[in-house]
Length: 276
Image (cartoon, rainbow, N blue to C red; front, side, top):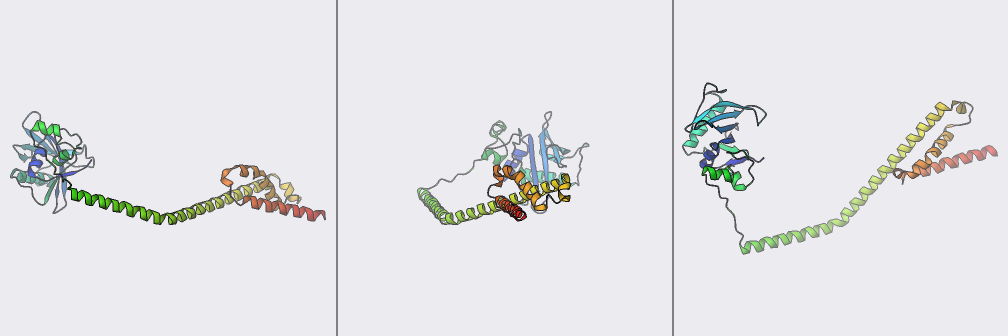
């Protein structure tokens, strides 16, 4: 929903008394703002006035009075009375509008919905006035005509030349940047692969360590008799996970295979020493 400022008294009054208007008065001097809902009384030629008094901008409106013959007045059922800022602001502003005066320090904004039927406005001319084309016709309100600028042949030629120059400049810059971007992408890919490899190595080390601890817990007699030391337990654990790791894409490019071979060679060397 797009808020739009009404810029002339005629448009303000037509919108306010369209029958179902929601608008905001804003003071440029103090910054204070109040949002009002002005609805037509179906049983008489007057209007009910309400002001937004809570966070829900669809339901938190309270009744403050009526507008009769273009003048605002409070009633016995008004929730706010003379002396309250929302009441005084609406009464004063309405008096100025009736004098064909749009105060310099006051802005009038509508919420992008037709002041008569409440439908969302999309046509720029309707957004500018706050009233849709069908409702404007039924109300007998003249639609605002937005100005257009016709492009001269000279201006068109200049614009096309400028666009061509920008496109050429853009392509030249892209060509100059291509080697640098390629290098940056390669560096990024290398960095990612390095981090993945480190993560994989840490994960494998964790799995092996857990397996070793499991062997210690379930086979304590092997450790007590000296049949299975720490390095041998690691080798057993490594062998246990070998096929899983080789078949898992996550472990491609890791250093685990190199570590595995080193452990196997160490075991072979110890066995060879024992047999000498």
